[in-house]
Image (cartoon, rainbow, N blue to C red; front, side, top):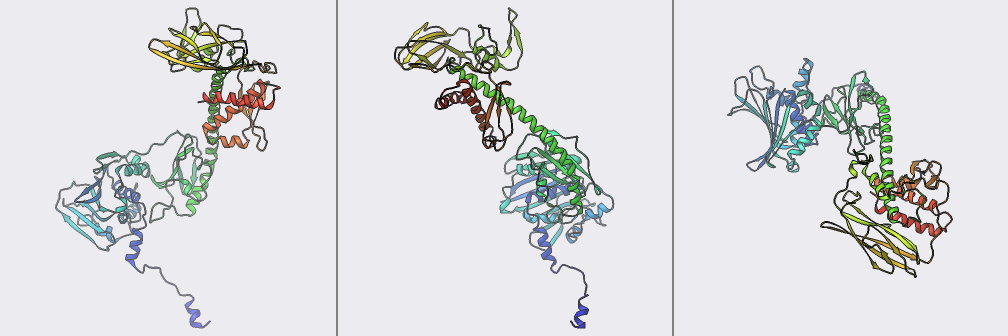
Length: 600
């Protein structure tokens, strides 16, 4: 290396912009979201201490426009008392607000001096008007992709305070920027700024003939007060987080001094994990000390301040995970109760339709009141369906659920709706009339029975209960009952299978007569069993680690049907001990068919 080259190796200098207009163009086009640009204009009005801001979207002389009018302090004035538009236009990246912040003025958001340039992403021309101390109105005009600007005095009357900003014509891609979209965006983007400043913002969409008031966005769920304080060397982090039911639309936004920077904290590297991705948490996290990317104001600089921000949130994450788990456990418990209630109700309906002499292992038909012949299964079902409610005293001292009182006739069915009778034998059947809420109707109902198809005879064909006498040969008989109450007529049908011989009864066995079981979970991933019956506790134990359960749990309706089929499997297996496997499968299909028909 020569001595001359060695000398040049230590050469130093200062960075500078080679093409100023090209730099301004890059800055002006760096804001990609036109709604963010509108939010910038509104923030300028809030910084100017405006109490009322009106955003107008309209069309004039064939050109669409967006106008923002406020009653704030207007553009800062120069020594002559006129709005200092020249400083605004010639000091890009040297904001007046930065000077004001250094002088101790608080509550100001802007600091880069590039906010007005974002009009390039909204329309082709910007005009900004403000009044001077002389009472005249002055206006600056800038055109997209042109380096010049003009300031002139306008011949118009304007209030002493305030500004009027107009962008026209709007760019082709955003002419459909409706008033409701602007309202929705500002409600989230400037939520805390609107709330703390008390500013009144309305959007007038003259093209749609609608008007909207911008209200700070309201979050759903329970506001969490018991969170640890998130402290950093640069200041505390403000937390406003809500715990609600799972919803994929829930997000936690990142704000700085009341203005949203990121729609979701998951947009930050290293924060795409629970609890932020859990769909249970929404709200805002505000770090006033964060440094923003100047061009878009929609990103955060990855520096030591952001690192401190993320570290301070770790204890908060731990607490949130615990709260989410508690809520999930409570939800699972409520869901289990709902599922059990639905399945037991469906099974009661199914067993009401199926032959009592074949499905009598569980003590369903007496409703748990063995020895009380006056209580029917239908009455027990009506009481179970009534749920919790007020009670009324009967004259005899017996209490009746308030919601058990029937309405007008709505339907009728035959119990059982399907039965098997041996040739030359008899079978008792009953008509079950109900109102629209499935309560038993007992007053002023007239019945008539008949054989629609097949052989057999009926006794007491005009009563609520009848006796069917089977013929001497096997076959299938279809019966019909007609119930009439005033002007209302309902029909119900039943199928009676006449068989040469019946299957052996299966009443015996441990746990017989215990009533419909409940269920519980036992996690055993990798094991093939799906469910087991615990006779001592009268419980169906379900393997919630089985791949079929995991698959079924993706949908509430599918999970309900899956558990219902497990119940049907256990009932059939315990109700028909010793019969061949193929007959067990037939019974499984039979019980599943009648149960799932009533499953809700």
